[in-house]
Image (cartoon, rainbow, N blue to C red; front, side):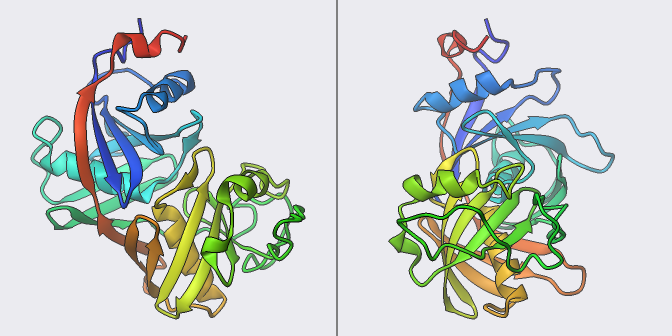
Length: 294
């Protein structure tokens, strides 16, 4: 039997981005890729990202987070999931501890300070963007990642060329389009996600500039698929838009699930993301869930 059997979880969302939160602090347990896929397969705990809390690693932090996509792969960042974790750590009666409204969470991509704005709204400091080709990473050396070339030539969308590339702890490619709703994400997303120029695959965004302070965005997430919201993609889009002169450094990003406010701070280059979270339900993992997750 999996050691995860009967563990409690929270099912949450950030703008419809499905998040499952699992608290393994105080244990030596780790989630395998097969166990993550099993959790994602259960409608009660289905997720776009699974946020797993472990004991802090770096002094001064409140928890270490491992982030899993539905295919069991790991990600270095998830802004919507980080906000959900922050709510759980300050408000959930089982998970919360006396840490105040400010937290510092850690992932394999770095430290993420979080501040509570109101009951269900949080601001995450996503840190500075990574813009060098080898930090994103890209296969080929680009002196300027505001525009890169992809190998994919899609008969159904030949205009999808020359995206911007940014890392927010995970790689993003942003295609600037006239109509973000004109594209079939399920048909196009997998091809672009796996384009050879992205050695670690990439999150694929279709960004439509409404005006300098407002972008409409749809996202195909690496390892998860089409999603109602992606916080790190919203951050990457505003960074890329500001670099190309398409947006201001502060903009509202409208996703299918709702709006995020993104600010790329000039003083220290950090990207701040503000948005809401919602608790849907709590539950425990049935032992039978992990029968095939050896």
